[in-house]
Length: 413
Image 1 (cartoon, rainbow, N blue to C red):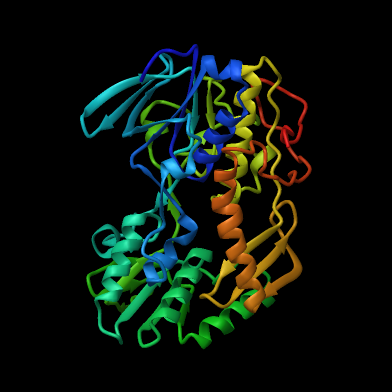
Image 2: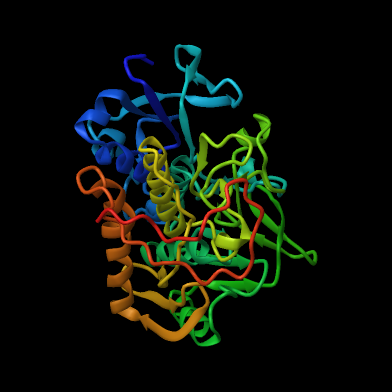
């Protein structure tokens, strides 16, 4: 890294949160600020992955979900390709493993947005399942399914939105295949009964067998073993179950929760190292502002935006603000021609309104194309363009090293 600037902002991870945060910071800088502030993106690869499209890749609807970083990032953002192995927070240094070897780079402000990955604690998952949480897993599933028999047996594991989307997409594109969807609990148990029934009808029409209330205990080359002693034959197993996070924060001695997410305060800063901000799936804000938040791009982008706003506030000697993020809907695609849009309140609790069928599919495609992928890209030229609903009313107060009056996202629209 060069040292021509007075202040270096390093963003770790080019996912939804990281891209949006980097673009918002860079595009918001004034000409004078650009002369003294530089923004650096550190990522293992040169691509942004549209994770909301990975089930489409697995089914063969599209060949890739990758977009070159240079098409997503502001032209002045520097890109450093490599995997961060350690954060030396007291010294403000990061160790990066690159194709040319390991190097050490410095930062003044760090945005920790390393994202999430599949939880692979079940025996055999890494060896025999295709992980739908990453581009390689989706691509290997696509190739395996495309090269298999027309009547092959495909098992999708995961009773959440990703599992439903993957099973429906695969069944629609490969109607002769036998598709089974396995859910540890009730399918989409967070949704109202009427919405679950609507999804179940669509899955039934695709010929998908749904197994609920059975967890997977082992994955083999040709079998998926379930709790209770039963097994399902499988030629291709697609893993769309729970998520985990990289252990970078834990390895680096930063405060984390039980699953390794970086602990941050209401301003998205770590309490011991206030120059480190967090955003995205690998971060856990306090319950006072984040008890309703879940791992998703719908949360990652607002967190990236708020982290960027507070980085800019500190650069300008202004007061950072508390996080305030609300929801409006949950969106699920069910093949190419059907979808479910479940309206929710700010706290992500379902409301008695939903959109289904073709209209639901159109809304979901709009969300994927215009909001999920378009919003981080638009921040290159229109910083602050992401509109974030305010969060639910605070019900508790966490301990913060910097107590502030709770406020919404800073407006620069």
